[in-house]
Length: 101
Image 1 (tube, rainbow, N blue to C red):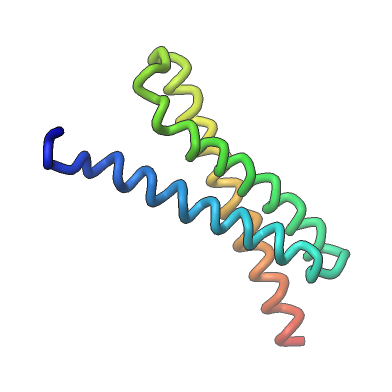
Image 2 (image 1 turned 90 degrees about the horizontal axis):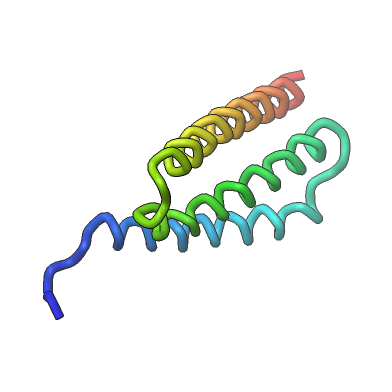
């Protein structure tokens, strides 16, 4: 066995573990979130975190995927990541507006 680390693989498994924790947090907090705009946004974020978790779990298999499928998966991860950031920023903006009013 080679004593050197495969750094990208170690980072990938660490990212998977962190994403698993995030998924647990999102589901755990779901019951504490009220309805309305925050609740709807949270439902969408829940689905996106689940999608990202699936994407992260699939990363160890990227080397076995055809390049065209791999490019599509990466493009989808980028696209849904942008949507996640948009929803998160809008949600934070709304919360700040409510606090300031």
